[in-house]
Amino acid sequence: MTIGYVVKRYPRFSETFVVNEILAHEAAGRKLEIFALRSVEETHFQDIISRVRASVTRIPDRIKGIDESWPQLAAIQSIPGAWQRLTEFPEATGRDILQGVLLAQECRARGVTHLHAHFGTVASTVARIAARLAGITWSMTLHAKDIFMDYAENRNLGLKIRDAAAVITVSDFNRDFLGRRFGRDVTRIYNGMDLAGMPWQPPGTAGIVAVGRLVEKKGFHILIEALRILHAGGRSTTCRIIGAGEMRAELAAQIEASDLTGVTLEGAMPQADVVAAMRSAAVLACPCVVGDDGNRDGMPTVLLEAMALGCPVVATPVTGIPELVDGTTGLLAREGDAASLADALARLLDDDALRLRQSKAARARIEADYDVTCSAAALRAIFDGLQSVRGAA
Image (cartoon, rainbow, N blue to C red):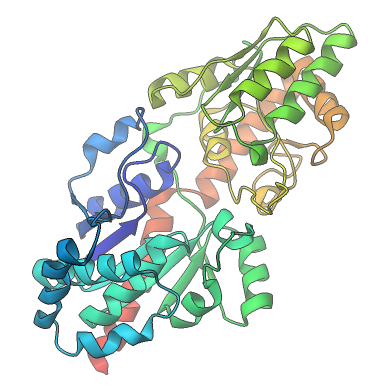
């Protein structure tokens, strides 16, 4: 079988888990095609992108009007019964429909027999349309924002969950929530890490590091307040905040107002530099919060990376994080509580033996539950099962 991966943008710096998954499939001998629905916006990417062999097809999304789109829509005649099926997608915009038509044509031309979408938003919308038109199966992996965020427009997640041949998510928390809300069994498969490329080493000593987009759900405003509390208590520590985003000016002003000279906003960095920063740091802070719009992290990749590398972590009990960080593999601070976060950071910074114990326990947890070889194999088993059922029908 040839699997088509459907994503909104490819590559994306923050979606290492997608690349790890694709590489694991390719290492197992599977043929993949990657389909991207929007243009790339970032300037930094993971080094591992260069190892992906699958071709990337960008599905046009900026066709202006009927004169420009008619040749693509007219070509739908090549798909038997497709015109009649276009009424089956009331949740879709005109752009979604057009991209679904084009993706269906690509699937037929390239022999794609199954589509898998990451996130339950536009990628799943278009994958659902294309799969219906091409007469193939489709599935999706749901993460967090696509489950919990209050979008301005209806993303029709329930419709997609009912329609998909398989639904996967990245934590037990998500699985239980989706089961209660939509009444469907959802499979939990943790995001996997390429552990062969991330050898463990003892924790570093170079202060605190935090990595992520500068957006509300990452909780960096809480981190800066925790650092102010530590500073006011006579503790001097450095903190590197790596990432770019809409809150940069606000966070910079907060740092200046708090007189924190050792706290720096360092912007986005290549993945190799991020890894080096985590290896040298004494602790990684991941103070996630639930945003005012419901947006939140599911299982932050940066936590997986830090724990695999040996960097001790402090996080918060948001969504699936306690399944990974449980007091033994890392410390949990109360969500949105700067004083609790300051206490947890100080505890780790002050206790080298604790940091080493937690570093080793964290690596063991990652090896047991988050090895991409195992998680990708579990996903392929689902794909294969769907093909077996389809073939027997």
